[in-house]
Length: 134
Image 1 (tube, rainbow, N blue to C red):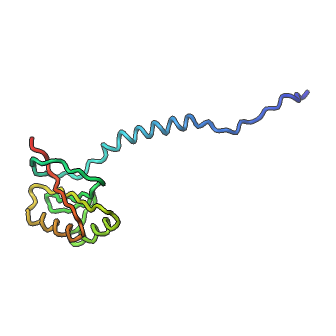
Image 2: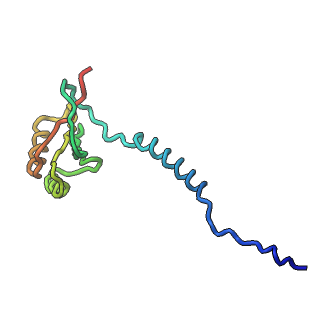
Image 3: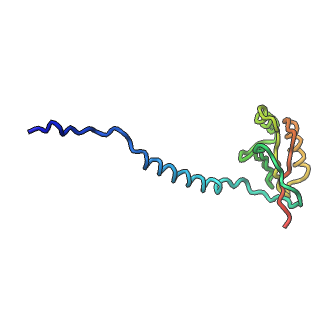
């Protein structure tokens, strides 16, 4: 007793709605947690009364810590290789801007040595990062 008109077809389509729901939840989780992870290097900046710097692109940030460690973004650098690394980073950029975050307890002479290396790397604009006065 076979039923001739009872042919069942398999559905070959994938239901993507649950996948989209999961991906949207993951996207929201990453959007919320990413700013919390980007904290940077802790430096005791000097306090001044100055205006914020307005830049077109994200500038490169060089940090000088209290123990005279030089950090290019989050990577430790030696003074000797600083200018060549900076020139390689900026060889294809039009606006060559660098922000310098120096701890207030670092000697002025050491900061000036770093500035000289940055300028020798071909940087046009160099900004100093400070904290606002309370």
